Image (cartoon, rainbow, N blue to C red):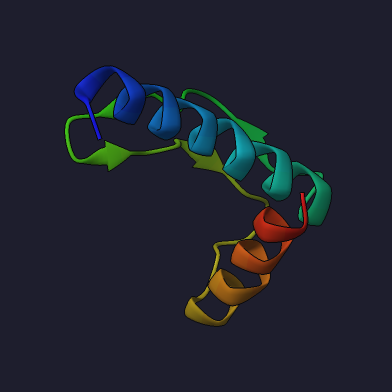
Length: 65
């Protein structure tokens, strides 16, 4: 995949993550979620910290969206 398309995919995936988080954990505050050279990240401030077992739930919601 060329770098431009990869950057678009990473940017879109960051938005998808934010959307899923807000649906599942509406009290979570979102800040920024930029794409990076190796993927993306999203800076979040949840009411309570996420746990390892939350990840499959978030991933599944992202797939549904």
